[in-house]
Image (cartoon, rainbow, N blue to C red; front, side, top):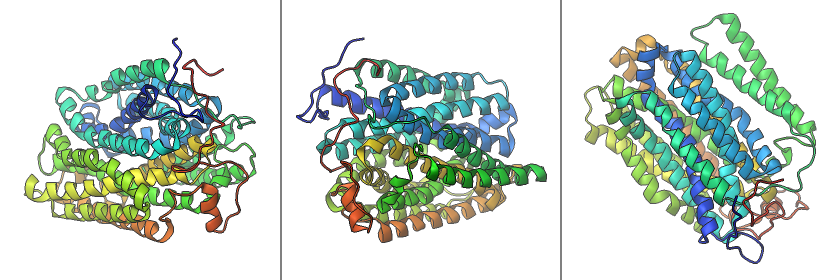
Length: 511
């Protein structure tokens, strides 16, 4: 394997405009884009999967939730593994696993096999997703991080938004092509990473891996999700048992992490009020987004009679808006602070959802669907990059992988809960799906509930996010919030360089 001699500054950090810096950004974006595309492209294929494999509402929920479940529950461990074992190494391992599972999904003969392979996909995503962002934070020089995170957020958001369009086109060939899409992309990510990416890790991390924490987190999410998804179908004993296991495991997880000196989620990172607030905002907003992305494309096909391709193309304005404005939103947040963008963004998201109340069986795209997705897309563009930058700015640099993992886990858990709860809350069933007027009423109720969650995010941003969080070291942000100064070197998005965790200059696997 050829070694890499990237252009670095005096502190040993990569310059974004150097060849190594550009390769780093490209691979980070492409790797995370694979998981984001797969998270949304499948939505369009759900009706075709239902018809081919007789999945039903519960089966369709688990095609989505099986993936989100393992992704959300293991992504914390994935971030911790990257910090300890090498972010590039874990990123590549996750990509390989994700790609292999995608191939199995494509040939699944039964809904059970498909759900199982989707769960394995989630494991791969849990390994690669936090690494894609943590590598940018750990390796790039401080003056380039905000720009890189903005580009990562913008292009990743475009990938998520373009998923339904790709899904619509691929479903026209066969729903199985939806799962073949990640295979060539994953192979490309692995080859480029081996050739061009330097390694980085947290050299201060010691002690055993927190396998107990990972197991308890998985049990908690599995139990609660199973209880929610099966609440209507039963049996009653299974719902109750799953709920009890989920709650008990969740409490045990919190207690175990507090007592474990080598916890995969160090409780100390939540001493930053900005980190906690940004993750609270992430939860409510991404729960709202999960509801929209789950229901909208199905609604357009079932009620308005769109083909899978037309339903996917309906979201094209979101893609264009994300591409045009997400990086600019990150730059604006860096200049004026994230508080205002993170307030305006969720308000626009909520407005877009409320505009979807105008969509019914007789609506046209231009008069009803287009205005809603445009406003929704503007809100999404205002939100994604600033909240990502805020999360990373609020923690110490050596915890970049864990912080990224926590934020991704929060986002995926929120989507998981939304997909599990919304059908129950709005009365969605197999019969409702086949009754356009009933499905319309259920969809409208879902949009009202989702808009309420988005507005809660705006309130959190306005009351809890500081305007200067991107300008200060995490320790100073905490001091001004009443928390004692840490004794470690820190580094936010715009903080001073402190890179004990990075080893730049060689693409050889870490030893």
